[in-house]
Each structure stands twice: as structure tokens, then as C-alpha cells.
Length: 239
Image (tube, rainbow, N blue to C red; front, side):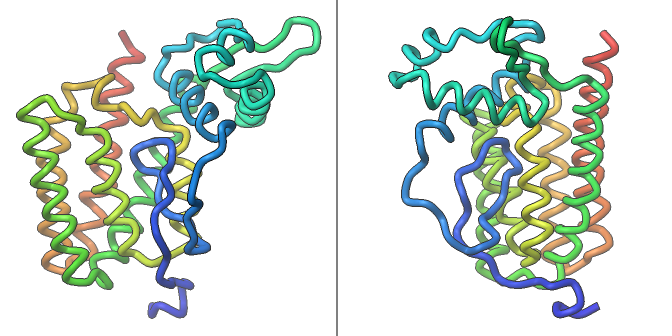
């Protein structure tokens, strides 16, 4: 299959997105700023996904507006988006409450991420450029250093996966990955620090596969990377 057969094309700069695996803007353009609603939406979504806002919690628009330093309007707009995503319920009489994803839905999201990320890694192994390889290697080194120092791994992990997925040059695939990535907590490593050692080894394997241009191995490692995260969640939900 050549690049024309699966519609791959170069993409532009990455969007700042919610979730460590949100990727790039398929249109190739990045906004100069994020609106109040987008900023609030990202924060509230992450709180729901990570359990900071527990299922059944009543959402107080006035309190959130004061916290974010804005009016009620962008807060309510953000909650309406979350209601369409199935994370909140907006009712005329009872107000706004957190619904949250079920354990089954969270595990389903990781399964989808595994399949899509595996495909992206396979295509990236064939088309990755040397500057991209160097950037991915450097990010991998930074993640290891951060793991030893207690620094922010989540942001570096987001950047690492973004670079791998950008290298696949498949806008439609990147869009699907971004949609699924929004439903995974951006602070996964903070919630489950025991997953860090396993992830570091998997990153090394993925970098090595990309360096060799081994698409089969890259796909296997990328799929396993998210499947191992799902195993951590299964144990968590089973407690």
C-alpha cells in the first residue's frame, strides 16, 4: 500500500489538546489562542475522567465561574459539550451533574487507542524522517530524566506520542486518535505511577523499531503500550 492508497499527507503544527495522546490539527493550522470555553472544557473533562469530579457531583456554575475568573456562560457552554460527550447530565429542574464514563467505556477507549496507535506507529516506521527520529529520541531521554527527578512526565509523554503519530502522515487517523485521546485522563501517570517503569521500557522498544524502520514491531509495541495501561485500569477497577 502506498501513501495515496491510505490518504496520507503531511500535517501542520500540533494543537494543544486534552489528553496525553491528543494529536494534530488535520487541516494543518493551529489557533493563536484558546477560548475560555475550550480552556474550561479541557479542565472539566479531565477532572471527570480522572475522578476528581465524582459521579453524581452537582456542578455549581457560579463556583466554577469564580474559580476560572469568567462568567457563567463559557462554563455552561463547556458543560453542554460534556453532556453531549456523555460525561455530564444537564436537566432543567435538577441542574447539572457528573455522569462520568463507566469502567467499560474507559477500557474501550484504551482498546481503541491501542489499535489506532499501532497503525500510526506502523505507518510512521516507513515514512519517518531523520529529524523526526532525533526529536523522538530526545523526548524519550527527557522522559527518562523526568521519571528520575519527579518532573512532569505527562506533558513529555504527550509530546512523545504526538511526534510518533505525526510521522504517520495520516490526517484521518490523527483525527480519530485525537477524538479518543480526549477521553483518556491527561495525568494518567499521576493517577497510576506504578505504570511508569513499564512505559519507559515500551518507549525504548518503540524508538528502536522506528529507527530500524520495522513497522511490524512498531505496531506491536504501540498496541502493547496501551494494552498494558488498560491492564493497570482493570486492576484498579477490580479493587
